Amino acid sequence: MDANESVMYSIMFTDSETGYMTQASFKNIFSTNKYSRFIFDMNTSEQKNYPGTFASDFTTEKFSTNLPDPAIKGGKGTKWTATLTVDGEDVATCPSDGSEATLK
Image 1 (cartoon, rainbow, N blue to C red):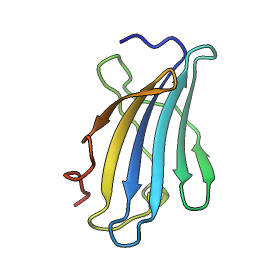
Image 2: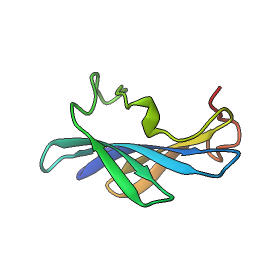
Image 3: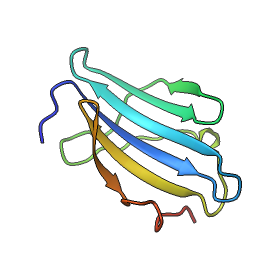
């Protein structure tokens, strides 16, 4: 699959006890060749951007990056779902329903 405009990786964290939701996202916009890393608090609708490079190791097969621990709200048992979005369309999720993925 080729992306023409942008690619974004998002991980949605949901605290299993409180239902608190936080989204960590990593996005590349090709027209400007700008990368962004941010946390979006789904409960307050606030976004916090993190400076620095998008990924220390970015290829078509893999990437890696980091965000500060306090940015993710949730405790033991927090569920997560990762989504790959290409040109504004969600094309893949892992796991597909989030039921088997938890932080330990």
